[in-house]
Image (cartoon, rainbow, N blue to C red; front, side):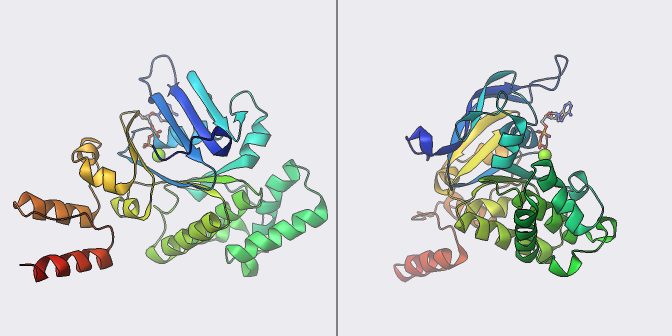
Length: 284
Ligand code: ADP
Ligand code: MG
């Protein structure tokens, strides 16, 4: 576990959390335990239906656990004021149509702030800032329904960011975007992380795993793995069991090992791999 021992540094804690949508349904999540430190970047992965979105909704109080407790910056996510929790931790969903309210771009962002009764001057400052950050300034007067998918997703991020959250969950937020918009979203996520915001990145793209020091793998509603990619590469079978592919670099190095080659270490980037191959080859 990479979580720091100091619980006051933990932003999001799942303490033995189980959840099912109804008594007739199977458990969507069972006995989930983990903590994410403030300012950490955690990647959550797993096959379709493994419980990733359920976990996201439990994290910000949209769903209440049937057993166990979710704590967000020290506040119980199910007993605390829902507005307080949602201000602390925002979610960007896969489909931006699920979280834009309409009107113009500016009105859409203002909507959430009006609900929080943010004063007018402060509201204007926040809107200007998030429009700039998400490259939406020129579109501020445009109706939301006329935006492209990429623009709508940027608007969804802007709306979440305007609330000044301390943590943001991106629930497969790039999966409907073209490569250019997906790359831009990724750079926004990196900037937010650098500014100290806790990031929970839910993804089923194996290539995202190597970019993260903390990976949580869900399988059938259970937490099947919690650690960094080096540990994940060493735990062969975890990803396959969870119906996931390992990142290409890891599969490539596993294939080399499977050939009986005494491959020294797992390299997590193309550059590192090139260096390892070079050092390996020069000893031959
Ligand atoms: P993921 O995001 O990993 O694809 P979900 O959290 O959406 O997984 O779903 C976990 C499980 O809960 C699945 O078995 C799914 O069918 C079920 N589920 C999700 N949403 C609902 C719902 N609204 N009502 C009933 N079951 C649901
Ligand atoms: Mg999902």
